[in-house]
Length: 228
Image (cartoon, rainbow, N blue to C red; front, side, top):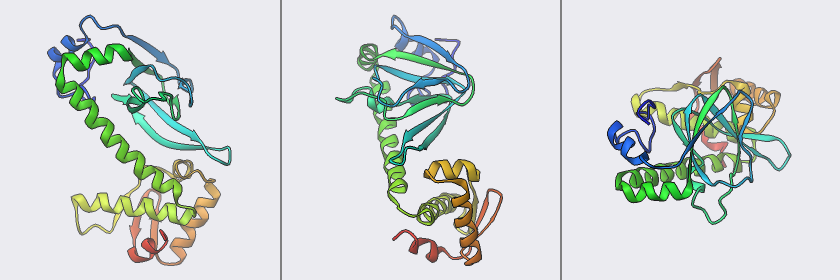
């Protein structure tokens, strides 16, 4: 394991190389390579391993009621994949995981992960903390999906972006989106033309200004009113 860089991995990064090497010593694991567009895991398939994305990136998608795909998250290395579901009573993947570029995935069987918990308490603590944070992220994601209107979804996304901007500069009245309109439409589970119309209407109503991925908020209260 010494040749692998786990420094950016949230469940291994703070352990250090020697400790990680000891953690994996004698453990059974495999590393698989997936090409761009290949399915790493399918929604509903059994989750029997701890998956850690070593290189590259993947996207996770879920089938909506309309039959279309909703993007849940884009994940770049080095990150665990679906780690919270490994020990669930119904341990199946809740999403499709697809490689967005060539990537390598470390796969550790469930029983081996339990042995690693017993070997190093800090690894267990990191694992629990990561999954707790992931549960919070998924809860916020569910909030977006439960908002019925596209304008409501967009308002929620913009207000969250403004909140993050305020953490570094309380005077900020705008932020740079982490998605373009095509990606944002898929994130909301709507069509791009429908999203574009909503953006244009918010601009016409004097609520926001948008230039490419830069959003300026002109009427924050009007955005909050769209959440109701």
